[in-house]
Length: 186
Image (cartoon, rainbow, N blue to C red):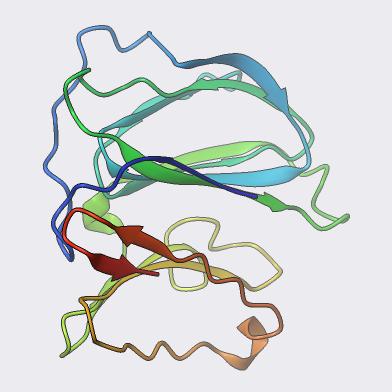
């Protein structure tokens, strides 16, 4: 599942400005709720994200960063509303079903800030950020090979991203458009 929230407003190819911490970090838009049997990646493109879980983790992620959660055998968590009210927010949450042999794994959590997200810049101005799986700091130990990437492209350009053969069985592309400057992102 892919859930996109907010409206993209940032400059293409750059990390959005950090709006700074909120006054009440315990205020969460999504209250405590359980999950089991899948991985969740929250990619915060603009604004800030926040998370707390039943393992005792509590983190805030800056623009361009990722929060990840392995629900595995079961975990409760609360999330969101960790940006100043006047700041823009935009991002994605991806839910990845775990294979049957991983569904009862021990729950895990992590935050990867923007400076630790691998980035590849093309000669044509494209920027590819590797958010999860192969080549990233998010779920690098998963036994099934996958990769989640965000590629921002200026108008009228192309970008070629070569994947290892093990990753090309199933490919999903979600295209979104930044209407403010008419830049197309995929």
